[in-house]
Image (cartoon, rainbow, N blue to C red; front, top):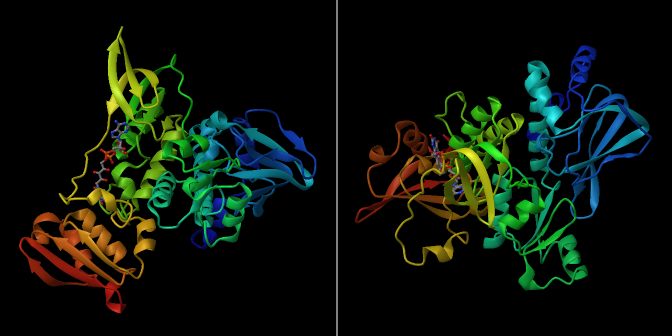
Length: 446
Ligand SMILES: Cc1cc2nc3c(=O)[nH]c(=O)nc-3n(C[C@H](O)[C@H](O)[C@H](O)COP(=O)(O)OP(=O)(O)OC[C@H]3O[C@@H](n4cnc5c(N)ncnc54)[C@H](O)[C@@H]3O)c2cc1C
């Protein structure tokens, strides 16, 4: 929460009387009264409305570890409950119950909440900022939501952790051997070592050695696709291009669905810091960019389904249809293919054995934690490598950048000058490969 503490007033804003009156026009039902302590919605409740408090208070609690609860906040008059899950009616990560003196509150179901955001610029900005900051705070807390139990740093745990993190889901990893709570659950449920890792969803459902798809359905990340519905636009790929398409098409009132085989944000979601996107003069992390675009698309009512691979495109009787992994089909009037480019991998025998077990293709905070204090080799001389140098160098013991050519030929000037400040010295020249080293220490941030 440390980064967000100073934004408390934006995270939990208080609407004044005129703003409450304006918000009333968008409510999805009449005001409701709750007795002291009454449940308003539970963790994992789907389509839970956001509630605007008119009298009394609402207590918000999150899960803390496997079995404990922790208070998130108490919302008073003029404050509202909800975070980004409420925008799309996805399972709630927190529970709400009436405070010690009860409360009266106005409901805003997901459709009405979205209508408020679009219909009132003033309120829309306040509410959207608050919902995003609340999700960011839950992610920082780590405990509210999904719990992974396994060997931290193992390939399977890293893969699931990466998927959840790229998808903007708070998650916490418990060590199957050393964490008391994790070990107790394994013993209680009679879990065998082969069943690890476990994923405990906010609903309490325990998944043994799940795939990303299993986790996504448990977390409500995949909207039910009705084979009879004909979408106006189906977008293949939820990278920056796909999400931009979704925002523009949905804001024109079209019915839009975005499908991605991996996670939202595409390649950009893996970027530690993007400096050259229009409108972000101070730079933005790929994940923050993806999160903003994702929420913007949800705000206009776009549906986003992840991870769903599109396997085939057909055209019959004037309608396009997409065949999806898992024997699902979807009908649409138009398809936008925003499936991006596939990055090249070095031609090294047995490379795949080490993927996710020492070799990564990006440097997110997860990889940074794994590399902390270690000696790391970074292969490549493009802009992404430059970003990774700047991001990783302050955290690792020693970083070797392995490049084939002069950096001036492959890296833009702003990236190479930032990476060279890490600092780097040429240390090896072998055939067409050259290695530069960046060392941790007082110099590394100069
Ligand atoms: C580490 C890193 C750092 C970067 N930094 C920068 C930077 O600083 N500045 C910059 O300008 N660019 C940067 N880039 C490049 C930038 O991320 C890409 O140019 C951008 O993401 C391309 O956007 P896109 O939407 O076209 O495709 P992508 O981002 O590649 O997204 C395509 C999406 O389509 C999905 N998909 C593909 N096939 C299917 C299918 N059959 N079914 C369902 N889904 C499918 C994929 O899973 C993917 O999520 C960086 C890239 C990386 C990897």
